[in-house]
Image 1: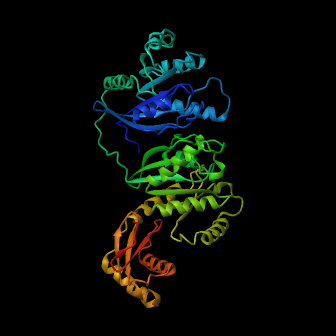
Image 2 (image 1 turned 90 degrees about the vertical axis):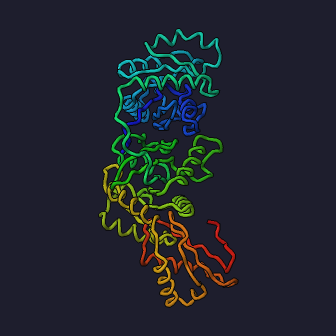
Image 3 (image 1 turned 120 degrees about the vertical axis):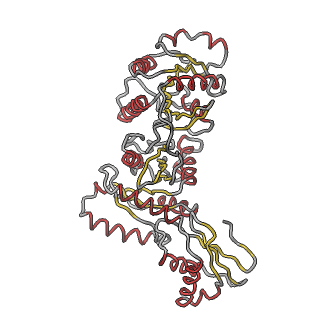
Length: 446
C-alpha cells in the first residue's frame, strides 16, 4: 500500500534528453542508469526528494517515441500514461541541442490535455547563449520554463524551487498519518524472463513494471510499497541475473547486475523465482548461495505452473522431490508453486514471505538452547567437545558455540546441531549461522 500523502512529480520526455541524469541529480544519488544509448530507461523509477521543507516523490519514466509499433513501446506508452495520470506535477524534459521535434510536439499535446501543471525543463542549457534562445520551445505550450544542466547541476536548485512552489500551490493534501518505513524489504530475484515483473505487477495490482517476452526487459531497480497481512512491505523487482561470461564489461546490463546484487544485499527477504518448465539451474543455485551467505530470508517460487500440461499434483510432487536433492544445503527453504500471470497462490507466497521474516527474528531462550545441546550430545557423542551455546544475534539468527583448543567440531557436527535446533524452532525460510570459538579465541567474522 503506497502512501498517497506524498505528492508525485513525473519526468516526461523523449529518449536521451537527459531525464535519468536529471532524476539522479534531483534525488542526489545514481539510481537510474545513465548512458548515451536512447531508451535505456524502460520502467518507471521512483525516488524521494526533500527540498525547502517539501517532500515529494520523483518518477523517471521511459522516453516516448512517436509512431512506434513494437509491443514493448506500447507498454512503455501505457506506463507513461499511468505516470501522467498519477502525477501531481509534470516535468517535461527537452534537449536544447536537438531542438524541438515531432515527438516533443506529440508529448506537449498529451500534457496539455492532461490538465496537470507542467514545467518545461530545457536540459543541457549550459551557457547564457543557449538560455537566451528558447523561443522555439515556448511554442510547445503555455508551460513554465526552467533551463538546467543536469550533468553539471547548473540551475538545478532553481528547478527544485519551482517544483516546490508548484506543489505548494496545489490543493492541500491530508496530513501524513502512516509511516513510510517498511517492515520488510523484499527483493524478487532470478534469471531473465522467469516472470519477475509480472509477479510484481500482480502483487501490487497495477502495471508498475513493463512486461514483455523480450528477455532482460527490466534493467533498473523498481521499488514500491504495499501492505499484506498487516506488514508494510517494500518490494523490489530486479534485472535478471546472467552468468558473468554472458555480460559485457561496462554494458548497461553489467550495471543492472551490480544493482541487482546491491538490492539483494539491502533486502530482508528474497523471492527466488524460477520457471516451472526449466526448473532450478546452476545460476539459480549461485543466486541462492549468495542470498544464504548474506543472511537473507529466502522463498523459492516456481512460476508458470499454468503452462504445465501434466497433472499438477503429480508435477508438484515430482518437482519437490527433485528440489530436495538439489537443495540439501538448504532444507529449510520453502517452495511455493505459483502462476504470476493467472494470480495463482500469490497470497500463499506472500504469507510465506512474512513467515520467513518472522523466522529471521527468532529468539531462543538460553534454557532451551542448553536443553537442545544436551539432547544432541546424547544422540551424537562427537558433540561432546562443545561446552556451551548461546544466541548472539537475530536477522538472521546467529549462535555461538565454544570448544577446547585443537578440538574444533567437524562441519557435519555443526550441521547436526543446527538440525537439532530447527527440530524445535524450524525457522523456515531463514538461514542459521553457528559461529565457533576455541577457549578465549574468537574465530567469528560476524
